[in-house]
Length: 560
Ligand code: ADP
Ligand code: MG
Image (tube, rainbow, N blue to C red; front, top):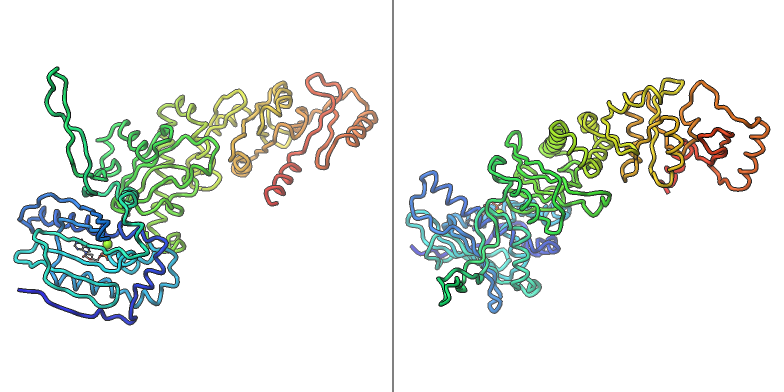
């Protein structure tokens, strides 16, 4: 039987490709992701058919090969997958892709990026036309008695199906690269794109060959010899760690994978292996990096995959905001990758995924805290940032974290919230029954105040990280009957209002005079002069800024 058909693709618009091209242009490299994914799917499908006993032929080498011909200006994506019959080409390539076309034309205005369009309209295959003048399919189906088929289309609405030339099962997609896209006719460029999207695909992806040295007996002196051999250049790891069971992995495996993802980073502190199939499917490994205070540099390091295909570094909305500093990978076919952000936020799976991740992280931290408090405390300077950030930004996380969050004082002792309350309550309760937490945000500058507070047996908390400003206010709101006061907001004897009067050796009149002199000479608006007199523990005259005034000023500065 010879296949011979010419036809016209029936859609309302003459030619949708100019539109696709126009809207997808900025992201046009994803054509390779789409075509390689299709090839991988085809291989996975034939393997599944074989496993189910529905295909009894020779499975052979199941790989996907990408080939570049700079002279002919073609890129070919070949697979030994299940192939297609001419009927299937009509069904899957012509009809399916085009069924969404009229809808596409109506909606394309709303699309913000290529991912959005491709997924929504089932145009994965058609992304080939972003970079091609002509696309050719050569395919042979696995089915008994199937004939090879060839499909060609130049990006207009007409296509041609003829007898094909493939002699083995599978499909070649041959792209005749257009003049504007010649940048893709470079080995380096293709390598770069394959590495970006395909590094962890589940089927080996071959791109050309490479030379390696293999053992080749011994030379005359008995030393081992090697010989150069050409081998397939496989660009991917087919079973990355997140697809494996945690029980089968060692710490070194996790550390090696981290190094693979972030070659120049220090080792992470610890990690969490995510693995859930109900009510949504998600796997992944999240790492707690060493972050210190450089927040911004570290953001957007989590890579999102869908069935091992890399999708994006933009995981905002999927990962809770406060965990955006984590590193690692998340793989979920249940995240709608191809819809707009506002839809994503409202998506119920995404919401569930978000709270699942929050819970897993909280559970892991609780486990570390309970198992080995000492080592947890040692890590606190790194973990603390996440935990505090989480506590100020997510109620649910606060409720869990209040049991393992630590407060650190200027003596570098760590206390849980509850322990700290117990420690300071007896000395630091004021006349209204409020417990006053005293803190410093700059221990070097505020040293004299810290010393004075110490003489009164007050404890001073270190609150000098980027998040602590917010953390202080959040603690004050969350903890009952608690006041937070910066150590330099008043002289020590007045930091905590008690019933007993503060003694001064100066008369009121003398105090007023000294105060006046100081105020005129040095004090800027907002500051106040406090005269304690000759109390031996304190400086007789101290310039402070009241806690309330200072917060107002801080807020004004942030606002401006
Ligand atoms: P999707 O992959 O989302 O289904 P595509 O536009 O990428 O959409 O592909 C359309 C269909 O064409 C696929 O579902 C598949 O049936 C068929 N197809 C595409 N590429 C291949 C291939 N290499 N081998 C077999 N079938 C393919
Ligand atoms: Mg596809």
